[in-house]
Image 1 (tube, rainbow, N blue to C red):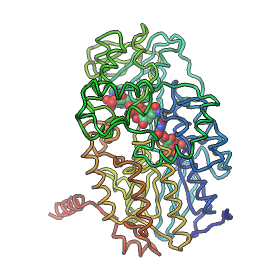
Image 2 (spheres, rainbow, N blue to C red):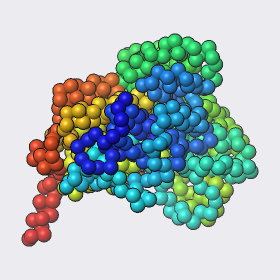
Image 3 (tube, helix red, strand yellow):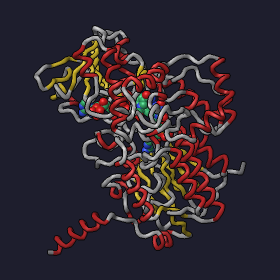
Image 4 (cartoon, protein in one colour):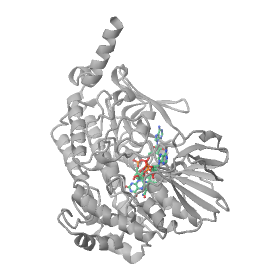
Length: 574
Ligand code: FAD
Ligand code: NAP
């Protein structure tokens, strides 16, 4: 291990500033500080480590990746010392794990908690990033690494008159630390994505008076079948841990599970049931990966969707309610597929009702509750928004990032994100985005792509420092090619057949574009490894900012944007 003196070529305060102390940022801090010996400051808005697992404390919050693969694999001691208690740990246990990692690696001393990064500007004179925080401080660094999460900016729809409502309101992604009192309350939950599906059964089981679920799109949820892990289970995992992790890192979804068949298109429904039933009984993601062509072949998907629809019908007593819960407008897993525990059964309880807002839209909030367009007023003591996140780009764009030539990330991404490999953006030198847009991120078991990204970024920074090359930035051509490749791949999948947060469509005004990289973690890993082996193909490496400008082309506007600007100029002149 080297001393943490400044090692890079500028006079900045730090070699690197990292933003975010979740899975990504913690590992990034460790790699840069402890393996490269760089001076690093990590800035985190929350008062503790954990990221997702610090904020999402709603009743029922737990992971749906299996615990033994929803963790780091880079450190043998951590893998040996930590033992998970359940197949899918609850939020407090995942948070405890990340606290354990932070303590084990002595990370806290370099983290500034309770501090939000409000802007980050690349200063061309000094060739450094100037990172401003909400406490008025400016930190300068040569490298700027965003580890801000794909799902870290909660979204609450702008319902008419929302602020007039006088009851309690909560968002699943910003749940209070103090216990919420449900006793005898009339509760509404809006949203039936993964968060809603986890919290609805738990809220219904609390000592509430009544729960009303407002559903816009029904989801296909597969049973999780959670259970405790005892010492015997854990010994078995430990015996094979290296192999399991290697399989996860070698898989398209970051999961160490075998597929059953290439396709279901040639199977009868009876054959398909024979394949799916054991996976249904086993629960979890093995169901998702049963057929390789699930997300590219409509015939396979329709059959799997059909199987799931029948399962939902079989689980809900009231046929009318069951039909409302059956998705018919999209293919399975084209929206992020949730796992569930007792979700469908919840609708068999007397104190739970379902409002389908496609039939009965929300008209407005009232002081006491929610009025639907049929004129009915429902009174609530509490409204829980399980309405998701400004995903993947939202948190990055809120950070007010400005690159070379005064170009902001917001301007650069006005038509949707453009990156090279989901790792960097042209015009933003020495900025790296852990699990950035156009990388596999959310389409997989995330610790796998997180480790993969952090390791690539660290090796790259290491190469630059060792080689005495101060600047790196994607070329415009490489960025255009990667963006086009991402779009072409997405068009071949069924993801693009439905509105979803993958498609940027859950937030009004965001450009419709498929954001994550759909080609698979395994192929992606090989691609970025090859880019490095070829001397950073598609990146400009430069000795000065001027040189970067000359050789890396100026930060690009797309051809159409440039034409629009030209047109606007001509109109002004006319
Ligand atoms: P995060 O954990 O989101 O951490 C980002 C951090 O950056 C946050 O702490 C945030 O406060 C901080 N930050 C953001 N902006 C700023 C700023 N401007 N200044 C300072 N700090 C900032 N994935 C799976 O693979 N399996 C699962 O089972 C799974 N379950 C999930 C359950 C829930 C409820 C949610 C919401 C997501 C889940 N995910 C799951 C996805 C999950 O987000 C990732 O697995 C992982 O935790 C992401 O880690 P991260 O460090 O990249 O981001
Ligand atoms: P989400 O998947 O975006 O779901 C939001 C829900 O709110 C959807 O049902 C959406 O309906 C609904 N909604 C949004 N705006 C609405 C409006 N104006 N009126 C009525 N309904 C509205 O968000 P999430 O459930 O928080 O999950 C986000 C992601 O976090 C997941 O996909 C997953 O990646 C991760 N997560 C994982 C777990 C886990 O099990 N480990 C748990 C929670 C979250 P539409 O579908 O019609 O838009």
